[in-house]
Image (cartoon, rainbow, N blue to C red; front, side):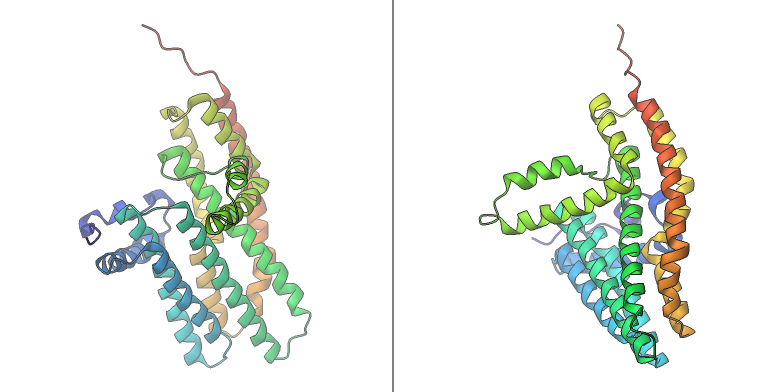
Length: 310
């Protein structure tokens, strides 16, 4: 039986939440992704298949960025936009058909990292072909590491918002994942073991960057369980929404726009320097703000829940 397809009038039901979507997502990628998700649902494709298809287009885009010919560059940009549209469509398809899974989320993150790693590689080879010093490899490695940290922190911030305010995301803890990892055997369930291992690595990185979020999750779960008070939800929302504008600079859309501009003026090496300087400074500032927000929320969450009276 074909998966049930959502109607165009309920396109927003395939969003994560409107506040967590960027302007370009709301007015372009989510609309295109919704149409693509409808199409793939008719074909009975799984969200993971759509993710992998997007990965293929992303890898082709990265290869085309190697060439200085503007025609190849523009073709690469078009493929990159298509890859990003498919990256939106896979999540929308999952929500549309009820096939959301932790494995799909992990694979989606891996594909995103592979696409940009491939782009970094081809941009480096392009710079070397133009006479850059071999020392550029150190610059690229530092920029790639910075990219991974920045993207991971931005994704964790968005997931925390969805978890605390709307209860629509799974906010894993490394302690819980470690227990799950230890109970799975490599021989009997190698795929599940691998997915847990990767999720554990990503979660530990995110918790290290934003320990206050993990503390808040533990306190809220212990104090309130699933019944998070509306006052705490609203306070979290009021604190987080102004920060989304800035976290958006560390997400995919901003990087793509910046990359396209630098490719058009034939200055791809500037992309690496911006990653290392402007984006890292922005990350540090946002983490400081996130820490302050978490402390404020921890004080509210740690207060004893009121005892019901007759």
